[in-house]
Structure formats: C-alpha cells, structure tokens
Length: 454
Image (tube, rainbow, N blue to C red; front, side, top):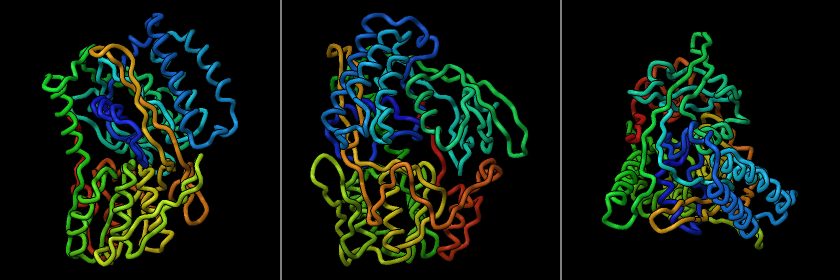
C-alpha cells in the first residue's frame, strides 16, 4: 500500500534520478509512521518548525522543477501561505504532514507528492485491498494478524474508516491512512461474496523501532537496512514460467537493468508467445521501459513527446534489431498498473503489436524525479523526499494517459468468489488467447503472493 521505511531510506538518499515512477501506492504495508495515539498528542514548537520546513521545501522544489510554471493556474505562494498558517495550528506532526500533502495535492498530479519521513514505528494492517473495475476487494491476508479472523479475500470494501471506497478516491484514501495518518485500529464496512454486509474493527500490528539509527557502514542498523532491501529485491524479482510455446513473465517493476532485460528476453525468444503480466506494476526506470520496448519492436519507436519547461523532446525507444522478439505479445494490466507499465501497454495498442487485457490501468503517467531532504544532526536526522513531475508525456495519438489510463482491448476481471478461492481467470484467459489451456485455479498458483518480513 505504500513505500516501506527501508526503501524510503534508500530512495531519499538518491537525488535527480530520472524515473517513470517510484513506487507510489499499492506495494507494501510495512509502514514507518506514528500511531494514532501519538498523532493526537499536542505538537511542540520543534515539530511545528519541522513541518513548516518540509512545507517550505515542497514549495521550493515545485517552483524550481515542476513542469508547468503556471502550476495549472493556482497562485503557489498564496497556497503556501494558507497551508503554513494551518500547520502553525496543527494538533500533531502527522496533521502537519497532511497539510504538506494537501498543498502538493492541489496540483492534482499523480507524480508530485510527499514521501514523509521515517518514524520509529512500523505498522502492518494485515490485509491488502485492490480495485477491480470500480469496486475494491480484499485480496490477501497476513497470517498471525488480527485481520486473519475478521476479513477474507473476496470481501468487497464498501467503506474504509467511513470513507466510501471507489476508483476516484481510492489512492487518496490509501495515501491518507497508510502514509500520513495511519491507525492503530481500522474500521471496514464489508460485503462478502454471498452478499452479506458487516462492519469490522481490525487491530494494527505495530513494531517499535529505534528513535535514532546509526547508518554508518558496518553498524547493525546499516546491515539491517541492507537485509530489508534484499527482502524487497526478492519480493519484486522478475519471474518467468513456460507452458509449451508460451512464456508467462510476471514483471512486478520496471527497475531492471537493460542488460538483465536482454537476458530475460533470451529465454522469451525461444518461444512463440509472450504473456507479459504487468498487474500491480507501479512503473520504474525509463531506461528499463526503453529496453523492454526495444526487445519487442524491430524498429525504433517513439514513446511520447516530453512536454515541460524546456522545448518538447521526443522519447525514443531504440530497437535491439534482429534480436527483437517477433512472436505474439499479450499484456495484462490492472488498476495498479501505473506509469511505465501503462506506457508499455498503450504502445502495444497504438503500434498494433499485440493484445492488452485485464482492468483499466491507474492513469498515473508523468515523468518525474525524486528530490531528497533532511533535517537534524548526523545521528538524529529525519529524511524525506518529494517526487516532482518534470514532464507530461503526450503519445502518438496526441493524448496523455494521466488521469485516463489504458483501457484494455478486452476487459477481464476476477469475481469475488475467484478472489476467495485464489483463482486467476484473467491469466487463464490470456493463456487461452495464446492457444494453451491453463485452469484458473492453477493460474492462481503460478506466482504466489509473498509478504515482506515484519
């Protein structure tokens, strides 16, 4: 559902990384944030100053780098003064962060937002939920959590903390409760696959962290960060499964080197059909997108025109030439497919290179960079960052995918009962198009969901 604390610590130390997307939402529920009890405590002057400094940094980084110097119309300085006054009266540091997020949210831009500072708690709500069509459903439950006995895959989420859950507000709800104001208990209104409605209150699993961490090399804290990063690398690894002349490639991110992309296509080229599963893929590096496209087209392809403060510049994916895969391409997307994943799928459509099926994608497609900041002393620093859009991407059809997404050639969704039983009829349908028989129950077992250690 959000960036984990360890991934954030790595990310915010990297400046000016050109990316199509840095995991926004929907990725992990390992949260580093203050509890509701702490959030309700009266904020002191130091924390007020800290929150105001974060707001000031947000204003400055947008002024310097945001692709639209008019900020879509609003007076940026006037908005800054308004939210600065609100932070002065904020009852908690979390509320101050919410004001920073609201300031940036006024841009209505999927790739411009606050990555808040790590704090000495880790939270796990114990469940995952996802949009299918216009409704949200529980998809996975973490064992040994309070959620295990109270919610089940296939439950439709009607309301989250009394907030209606729909496609329009879904990401905002997750960002609010997972990043800015996480809860020690979560109230859900649910409808099970048989149509029965109930309300549950779920206790959050909480782990105390250090208030200060020594991140110098060879320290225990540093090695712990390395281990956590290794766990994340395993969770988001590339996986391939072969059925006859069909390769099913589960691609969770576009954070793979061009050399590794070429290596993975060495296996793909031995078969007639590629099913590229981009469900849940939040995007990644532009160089990975370029290389993926270069391996499925035998000619250079224009991805989009980059529209920003500088002169428009076309983004071109260069082919690998005679080594490009020439077989059938089937791409699967869902509501969590974002940015680079959306660009890839839409180019497959625009260039008539293959078939896209699944659910309408996220509509989070801009080009952005991450800018990191810190406050405090060497051993008591807080780190935070901003993702800032530096270019809109206008595709061959003259349109941007931002707030629109990719509409598949064929809509394919699991039913609540499919989710409850662990079936994957969408992957089974892709296999059917490829000419192979794959039972939905067997499809659901090919790439098993894995939890990060807590």
